[in-house]
Image (cartoon, rainbow, N blue to C red; front, top):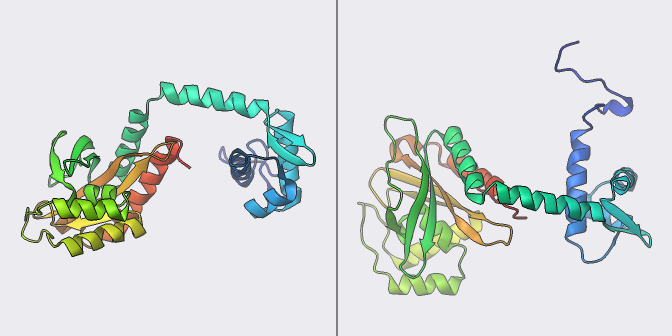
Length: 269
């Protein structure tokens, strides 16, 4: 038997570590109880989680043994063990600062894409994004920017992603007061087209710009949110356009995936 093998029991489930599916179900089960103000019946949990009642009943009994859940009049609610665990997790999150979690995700994204990764925050009154952190690509030819550099919302992927979190009225107000300038040969300066680009970013969950803030630069961005749903900033991959062509969809998928992962690590659901 190799070192990576696992003994299996009835039904093919792995012993020792437990079934990965069961772990996922426990997490979803606790999330469902967290989201409810009232105790939830087994039948309702089964519908919400699309899981057989028999499977959930077994998990609930195990969680009840650890006081993570409590049976209440034929339904289930969180128990004192869950709140103790929540307090411990909150303390752990306090020790592991949010900035560390964001930077860890930025490093992962840099490794996955091979491109420079930036964190952009917005100054909505000034209509500018500021790059507050970066992980630079190891490629000889790469996008170079300095922490503290500022760019206008309308010409950057990060700016458009941040605008997409605002109300349509706020976006309209911004486009009325801004005077777009051509920062590159193909910079879009038409307000109607820019409004359309922001709306597209709102639908897609990410923004992508090609040769907008500078010639030869492609940006792809999606926002990071915290536990309260607030916008932390925009996660941006910046790449030479020549290298980015042919992998625009790939870059968009990677940025969306990592922005979601960082947001989850910050407590966003």
